[in-house]
Length: 417
Image 1 (cartoon, rainbow, N blue to C red):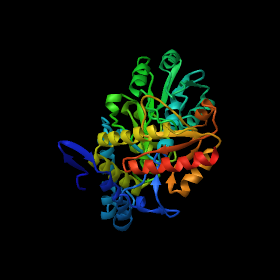
Image 2: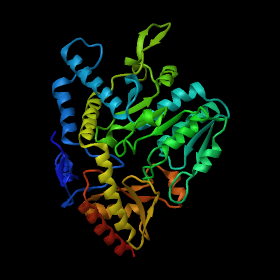
Image 3: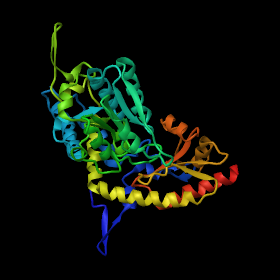
Image 4: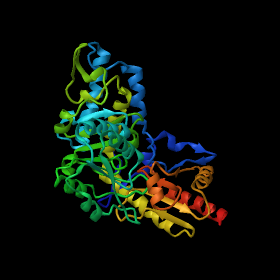
């Protein structure tokens, strides 16, 4: 892939128009208008390189992995395991076997809640989550609490959508056995001080899980530097295919945790009397996996590495700042989530207009946004609103597209006011 930067007077310029050519869907017309895709927090679009890699697998490599001695199986296995190494390097995991393939962030959290939770939680133990969690980081812990008698405790947040760290500090005690916190809020854009949370919890020898579904595509993540014990993300949020995700876990925990599912690659030997489980990481990878998805995710990560996650973050911050200034000046529009440290997400409400109506009108102008509670109903109740309209930006978006959004929103405001 060719370099996506040009140098002008020693200053690097982000070549967004060149990048956009790699994403076929961005040239689509919606209702006769150019597509403006601002639903990136729900799922990102895929570059042609990822799409081609999936097609290539099914055209030239289609075979089940591991154990096969024929050429196709060995070739597919090589590509599949190559992605594991790419992911290890991308998040700087210490051991290759700490990278577990799952279907996505949701399954990764459920795996830890079930496998670690059943083995370690007991009655009156406490599990801490934050008030801004996605349902996927609430429900699995509720389920495990119902089965073990543990209690779920919620770290509150302030009116800006920031965790109240003093409250978190006060909640840590000898009963606290686990902390699971989102790195970046999908509905508010808040970047949580995850390193602070991890260090504080570790002072009590409490393991910490990080939901990185909304941070992996925006921020540089080094699991050894963070010292998190578990971390999860989804491929489709970082320009890869759907149905593939990653669980990172420290080896010392993964070795002790029992399998989450049974069958396929997770076994070493089976008899009717006893099953011997496979070694890591395969102990947690039961059944035929999403092979094409794994390969596609590896290509997506290489694509991101070529551009550079720091360059992506810098450009997206410029988009966020530009959009925030435009929308903040609109009478009748209120931004929900005004944390000092945010990623490229803006959620808002408009006077007298339901978010679903806002989204429908924007769609007629070719602008794709997300409306609803964004799988964070407790967040909506915290701000006493039923839902928001959410515009979320990616490195392939442009300032002109934000102008299109602003123009369409002015139309909505005039219509409802």
